Image (cartoon, rainbow, N blue to C red):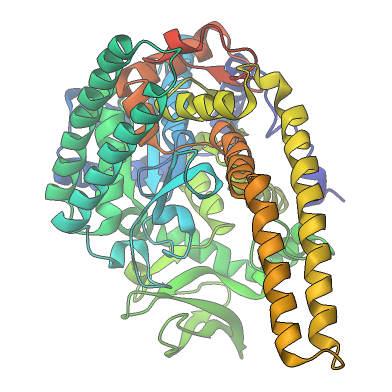
Length: 566
């Protein structure tokens, strides 16, 4: 029997090129026309269109292209591509790149099929703020811990993202100042290197600030129209995708649109005994895997119930005679809930449908079936539960479209990366990053030798402290002498400088391996240019396993750097 581990090697998640994905989508679309009546899909899409329009009106991103796409969604013949994500703070490039992939895929499919193709982006605003990326964004900064500057938003634990108020003007100003200071500090560290032209650097820094100011206007506007923290982050993403990039991507909050899938939720409840068996099979003997579902998912009702406190309740299945129900306590306030959904074969949830949301495994089952989705672009963190969902869908006889995860590493020469290189060059005496490991090993050896000498003196201090035969005054003087010897050793070996330089060396790797937030792209590449380069890569290269080399304002400074961006 095929398990979720077997599905890890399924071609469903592994595609070489965009063309391969398109071929699978075309085949799936034709199969779906033969397999089922699309009447319910059309009804769901019309209902979804209303919530999409509401989102874009409130976010002020109802562009002519979005209007046209909403009209296409409401037509009988339409192919739907989907992706979804939490509304993270200044989301990293991979979140927005999913919209770019669907934009390119939609163009290819329209040419092949001659029917409207719509890209839908679901905003998972009912997730909990416990996820660090919901309230943390990262920028490369070699002088910070681990080479990372973190922008943070303080929020109570175990609340849904849409239950949190939007950022205050004070918080916005602090982020704005922090990013401006970050640009200035990176520039200042670069200027200290005599190998760079300050005049040329001044020009590039000016462009970076100009890029940032344009980006910040979008941030400020998103906050002006937002009613919650979730809205703020979602409006930022939509502003970039719909206005700056000009995509026709359709956005909707899950908190709005999930209520239209009442019959799909009831369908899973009506088959819960089978669903439970298949979930258990999908999870295998290992139970919860990395990125997979809750360990007792097979005993859990396939939706959350939302508590009045703004948090959520996980409902364990409870059978009562011929009815099915759920019981559980709120994750935050502990309030107990017990529900009777009545008949096992015809459950009723109309009284609570506006207060529930799909769980990670049931979300694709609900949306793919309800909308007749023909492709889904997922994220790295969701691969395991998507594999598990695919298995369950197959066993239940539900359609499951092609799914892919496109997560290349964007290699580019930004101001943070350039600052890291300057530090590397200063510490090592070379710009050849290929020598990094050798240089780091040299530092470790020197520091290790000094540490051994310091520890040897420390042992002598312990021996003196434990030797009761030594007079108190003599003991104190001996300890002072040894402490002085340690201090002298640190001084003559320049231990503190060596240690700081070693930590900076480690931070250089942190900078170069970082998947930074969208602020870094805005400052160094420019938002419009980011989209243009991603699209060009997909159309000209199209290899979904390849990393991407982006052009930036600072490329001129990296022309002589060996191996830094590889």
